[in-house]
Image (cartoon, rainbow, N blue to C red; front, side, top):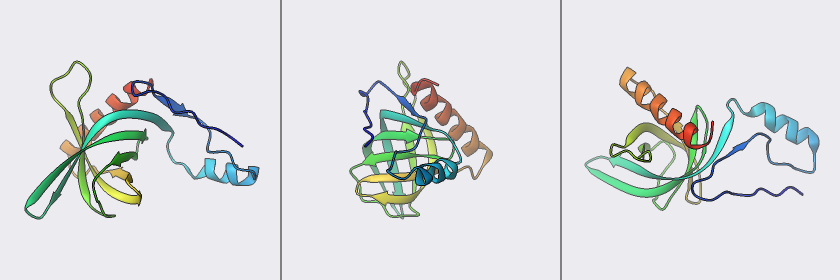
Length: 139
């Protein structure tokens, strides 16, 4: 049995191996499945949902990040395919960085968000966002 230890709010850990199971063949298959390396985080973020004519802002926590997206915990009801913005304010900065994304899956109040890069400006913002969070993760 494997145990995973979560760090404090300011700590970040790199997950270098998949969750361990009793079957090594499943572990290898799961390791091959991942396209990008994941970085364990526990940082405050804001999740911004724009639907029709209303905007909802919810505080949340970033739990994992990779080049393709991130895992977010937020106390807001979202559906798969909802478009959101994830906002992070770096330490010692007054201006937040915002990245567009789409909800790909949900488990309880944990949401898998895939980064979107529809325009050149979105690509630039997303790249800046990823770099800041990876820096916070210790990379």
